[in-house]
Length: 477
Ligand SMILES: [Ca+2]
Image 1 (cartoon, rainbow, N blue to C red):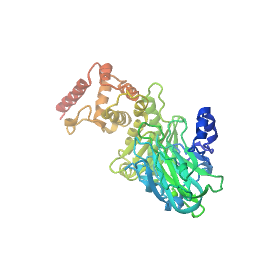
Image 2: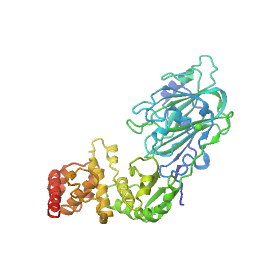
Image 3: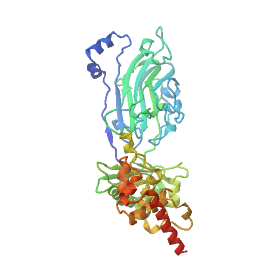
Image 4: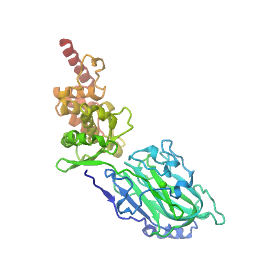
């Protein structure tokens, strides 16, 4: 089994308050010193991140600078409440923060805590039930893109001081009502994309942070996306000297990794959920992927575009009726469906999903609000054209027959559109798919392109294509 780790950031990266102070202007510094609310964070946070594609033993960070998540820690039994903000109903709620369970997938809303889109974060309160000696607070998050990074300020209190307020809502500064500011955690960096596994640990070099009963997190949005930038918090641990913590059992992913394109690409097959498919993947699927991923990349170029060089093909349970899906550089394969179709459509479905990995049509809209949206029938038609007419033409899987002639519209998507694209390609423009793909990826798809490429409108092409099939089927009953 090949298995490799790719730490993006393996050394502790403390959030140091000093440089922040030094960048304040003189005026701001004076104002800050005059303000009774201004309070320096007392501790630094250690931050570690795994890139998305590593996904080896989730949340086990290099050299354990950030410890792996714990079970039966102080947070497990604490009483949690949300003082400000609204919990996203698609999330796992507050329970996901301290249930001693971890997501098994980079994009698993129900296994994380997060706030509603378009919101400015919120405040989380943990009541340990009594004053305990707190050693550290560790926060973990996991998301393929903008919802990975964490930004929050940590406060703590033993609840004993005069004027202590147990639930200070925004905009009240907790340090004015009996709280200490322990640290500010900000895992963002300039690197893009921001996806991955994040761990942050607020600790004091092995010594206690202090004796506290209450911990308060003022959580901010990450600012990485206009709406969807609320962190997917997977687990929060509060480590105290009272607790006999245990490790959360994490299954080591079973990975089989291959190189393609003379080392340009690396493709990892994640067989954790389907170790029984190991032999088939090695013998039957891997050779197809090694041959076809570089071919697809070469077939679908556009100016300045670099296709993902690391792809993960993961076999999963619980995908219902969906055979396979793709998101970013990840392909999910329905293990149950694959087991039934190993000698049938299994390999071709991976070819289809690999085309989606190369398409990356979402990119244009991220950088350009005026980018056009490519219609879904074409997004799905291109992979099926490549699959049925270039990868496995001998299977004749996208034929128009008497049975499906009634449904033969150019925009019927998947294999019907694939058949249409094949007809336009062979009849009018052999370079059609390459050009359509480049336009779609660059956010400039428009129906007029069909006229530009073939001299005929899309509707006319669709009608002629259908008539060709009608004539063929009439003359060949
Ligand atoms: Ca825990």
